[in-house]
Image (cartoon, rainbow, N blue to C red; front, side, top):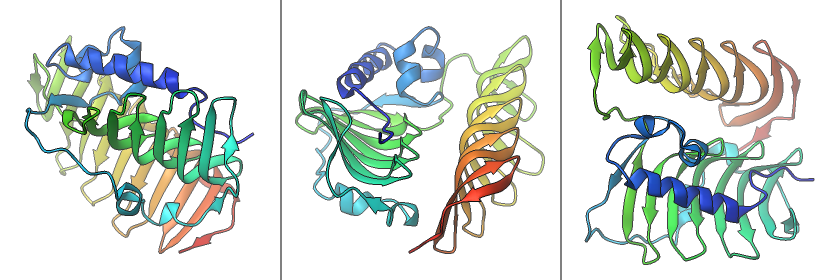
Length: 290
């Protein structure tokens, strides 16, 4: 059975529409809206904000989506399905895969509702650029991070832009400041969403719990390294992307600041997919040349 992110696109459309309604109900950020709002939490990355787009903005052409937005080398040469794969009585997948997981560029189509997702997949999850065409013809196009929306634009059925989702943007009410910190404080502790900068210029923007980096966030190091993903107790923990100044990259799972689980290394035009344990690879697929 091929692993795909959704078994029911209609259910996801309903979650997406409910989340958009919640976003439109206030000018605050997702961070301040997230409490007890499951549809927002299940669809969008915490820390994103939204902005209503002024009427009269030009509509957008999607004709060259696949050609213009196919990701870097990591997506270009994986095994292709020769025939469409039927996940169930409703869902069909057309596209690339690796080790029985959707991986590369692909399309998910609902036969019953005509909902279409097309975009990029990693390890059976949506990750990278994608667009969702809903049952009434309205469209969301943006960037996804392991099945959640990071940023993008929602268009109505006439392809008029309605809502823009922005990535990790501090703009919510009742900001309080602390030395080297800009964001939410509770009982004089960093709690919620904020930005902290160290004296060497390294900074983190994302979620905090009890003064610790915890949840989703982005770290930019003084030497040019970058990490985007999940944290726990101020350590990288969960899915993440790490990028080095020399162009090397890693996309996959972390545990306590070390690569741990399924991951993908990108370097010098080559990609290796493997299993990691405590920072070391113990199984690796063949490399892919591009």
